[in-house]
Image (tube, rainbow, N blue to C red; front, top):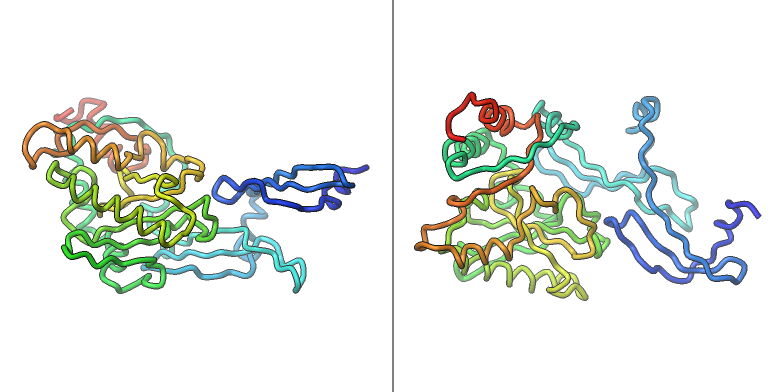
Length: 318
């Protein structure tokens, strides 16, 4: 009996598991009356230049999930429908950046990573001015468009109306979530207040606000997705973040950890809150006073303008 005939004779009974953000499924069933398990996983993309040159023409049934400024998100099929009665579900999640910039090209190209330690002095003398420059260049425009209600409002899952406006936030799906696989749940909470650029701006006095925010988010997510209980969620922040406006990542515990959840990128929100609460000093003490270690790519401005010169002794402040 050929391998192909075995697969075509597989009779589905039950979905046992779904992981890797919905890209791998494990099915229970039978073949010729005997129990069988079928594990299916998305194959790697073909990197043949001929295929890649035709990629944009090969995808079909493109569904627009949203757009904001130069960013657009889609679901699509890499194969046509099997039949009118059994349409092929979307198997591609596509992000489009158009028109893109040289900064985008550097960000998404392969680059060797470096693990660096940012002291309070390096932060104050080099990194904080870099953050300021990024904000002044308009790199936050697309985020502020969402907060101000100018774009992507169809993607806002919830906009809070707290008694203290400082505590308001927006809840949105992360760009890389397919918005349907609960085990791959990945949400973003954008705070409305604009005085906190990153975890570095958090102070001891902010601990009660953060603890209340975490509690409120857990409750709201459980309401939006019945069956997802609080202890099925992880909360973390990035440092360095992709953009300098404070936001919290909320993911299902079953979501396979990737680089964005790894040491050198993610800081557990619960740990940050505890660190602030137990920190010595008054309410002004905060994360600006601690060392933070993280990874940077060799093509990033933080590496080329700060850490490489410091490593080579071309800058003071190490």
